[in-house]
Image (tube, rainbow, N blue to C red):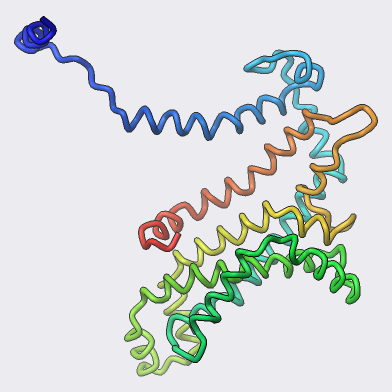
Amino acid sequence: MADVTVNQNAARGLSLPRVNSRAVVMALYLLFLLLPIYWLLNMSLKTNTEILNEFTLVPRDLTFANYATILTDPAWYMGYVNSLIYVTMNTVISLSVALPAAYAFSRYHFMGDKHLFFWLLTNRMAPPAVFALPFFQLYSSVGLFDTHIAVALAHCLFNVPLAVWILEGFMRGVPKEIDETAYIDGYSFGGFFVKIFTPLISSGIGVAAFFCFMFSWVELLLSRTLTTVDAKPIAAIMTRTQGASGIDWGVLAAAGVLTIVPGALVIWFVRNYIAKGFALGRV
């Protein structure tokens, strides 16, 4: 009987709407990803009383006092400044070291090159807790404790191997004939590397810079262990929000929202490079 009805509808020119299963799955996935971010933003616009006593999907008493507290209190906004300083330093140092290292791995073959390359990646696999105490004692003895450069150098232990691995894949995709042609044309190695080779792997540099920035921005253990006051990052400050009156949930949520902003801006500026990285199979 159902088949007869379907045939009659088809004969009348009626078509049943089709559900795009891929679109439904993608919508549910995006909802799953964005729900925590929305809830964090929702909490940041509420008072502590409303957060603790009521369950509301939108703020009833909209307030920006939590953001005002962060943007006017040096104990809060200096955490963002400190984080941006050492993250930027780490990204620059990591790329400066990784570019020549990746070029060597992609262009030359030497004894133990594969083992050395694998050893670099094992540093990225090791948990930061393994290196926290050695770094603490080393920096305390040389006077680098509680400085931005201390955290930047500590994060190089993990970001340099990652940058080398990403850049090596992009460099291997550039034909070696380009190097030889540049030398024939009279370019020095420095001139060739800066003027010709670097623009060819700009996508790889953008991808490596993105991952170095993000891994250094979200790392907590080393940045908290190696700093106390002068270079304390926002991630460490957010773990110390409990006072005599309890946890200030609204301010903590506002700090979390502002912490997402730098990462979102970096993703926006390097989005095309990341897409190329996925296309080349190196991300």
